[in-house]
Amino acid sequence: MTSRKVVELFYDVVSPYSWLGFEVMCRYRNVWNIDLKLRPAFLGGIMHGAGNKPPGLVPNKFSYMTKDLHRLANYFDVPLHPPSDPFEVMFQKGSLSAMRFVTAVQQIEKGGDKQVEQVSRELWRRIWSEDKDITQPESFCEAAKKAGLTDIEIEEVLKLCISQEVKDKLKHTTQEALNYGAFGFPMLICHIDGKPEMFFGSDRFELMANCIGEKWLGPKPDSSASKL
Picture 1 (cartoon, rainbow, N blue to C red):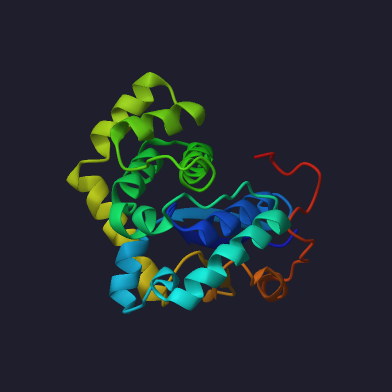
Picture 2: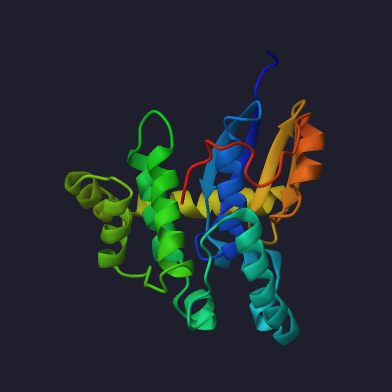
């Protein structure tokens, strides 16, 4: 077998399109010959650093996005239901604390990223399925418990997520994404023959598969894909 290609997935749980890209790549990580690296980052920092404007701030784009997400949820089989006030969730409350929490989970996890995957999924579910908060420590605890973390692990993560170490790590990951040319999420970086190739959004999987020499088998490549 040829050496596994490294694919980095930069994402933020405040982004519904990131959730779609995240689930697809988690399904394909054992189908394609890839080594998937989860890279939690801060979308607010990306938008500011790239000088981009969120689609939710453009009325026509926002109207389209709500319809588009409904179609995409059905296609990708992701339980995505916009919150009652998406503007408040995305632009007033934001996700800085949540992404520091995910970064702290990654900091303590050894031998893989299963906990990072599960915690990220539960935070997405809180916003985009259950219309719940992701800004308070109590919210993080609920998500982490559902993800399978122990009380001791959760206590450690809560302490770590307010540390300068984790704040700096999240800033560094966000800057790495900007250095690759990020302007939004999800962003995938495929390392091909020593060269990084960037793919943005949740609608470039066929092109990405072609670039890495794999086959796109649809949003659910096999029946063993995790049930949400």
